[in-house]
Image (cartoon, rainbow over all chains, first blue to last red; front, side):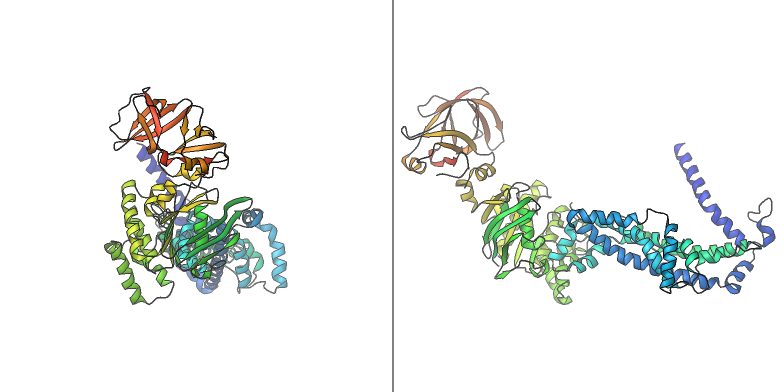
Length: 273
Length: 357
């Protein structure tokens, strides 16, 4: 009985999570007359590729997709490199006056105010740097935005690893960099994967900064491009859904690819019997 | 290689972990740093390894002063209490690691790894992951990783303390044999006096960051330099009895008994008044009938250990432990007479605890 109830609840949860995805998928394939039919058409409609054609061949969504990919991948990579090094230092080195703790807290405190309050200063800075409406502007902003999360998440993973491991590596003849590269980083791979997905999703979905800092097709990202289909005269539901479906795919693929690293437990057996 | 600690100290803020430690370890010598937890023995080892920098003093490995030198240039090998095997590498990769980072060519890495693995009897385990190994096997892999590159010295931080009692005794013997065969200078940290006594050429007893005594095991046992060493080494611990020297009567006088002293001891104790007498449990003799030189006591309780029996005795307010043969059968509250083996008495200053005789 309890088991049956458990499964019923799980199925319900899965349905709630997947229903919008299904609805988006069908909308993207339905002719406009079918989209808002009452009662709703769940299964039996004549699929059409017209919305996909319009989105990717008439409008420059292919370009937005490329921009989004460049921005998300570069800023995730940058944030991971910088943040991981910072996190390792903060996890391993003690500074006088508890500075390592204070520094960590200061880093996360940059995420304690709503991001919108930074929009005007960022806009002015990017204007003065002549970076408005460019891809680097978004990469810089997203990197800064993600760094606190990377530092905090990775610091937790580093602190779980016994110091003995890198000390053994250093006594064995490795430098600290070598120990980090050959011993520590392979062991925090699951953490890196989890952090990377997290950053990637945030960058991929980010709307506010992209909307303010970009204006033309040169730097517009997918979320802004999709929102652009809400126009003064009409809302292009079919086109928006088609773009949404395509936008979902890269993240899904990446999540599946790193899934095996997300399973923890690699470091079991490292220490003690 | 010779390892020399010259007046090294380590302070963390106001805490003194190691206090002016002077220790010369000869080439090929096996020295055990022994002491209770927090005595500074591990800190000393980590300073030799280069994982900590001494606040003051100098450390030499061979001819070279290694202060400020990162661990990798010191060419010492360390075995950690946790073994610290790299969990993402196979046994072979673990053992090869010190050679790999030194850019030794692949062919000679392979032969050396095989040779060391054979020596330690883990030849069949080379393809395994550390998590698939038992505690004893992990221990051997950690040793193999230390041995493989023929370092200037081995540093071992309680390497046996995670093994079960039986395996520990076995590995202890193997470790001793291994060090004998390799002839590599070894510094070994432990809080287990049995390990210290069995393994060491010399035992360095530490307490409160200070070196208390550094001598061969037998000398540590028979002539402890102070009351701390005397009480720390030996199980059950040495009995301590406070008293005074009465020069006129040539006796040591306690509240409950007095003891005749020979001329030599008396001359060494000349001018002293308050002293502490130390007697090891095996030097306490128990007589069941009254004797002229015995003093009366009562059996408090006895503990049968199988190969020996500990008799806890009540001597007035004092409690004394005697180690006797297992044939001794004494009921609680039995009146007995005690005497001490007078060649094996230890006298310490009542205040400073320094050995007097």
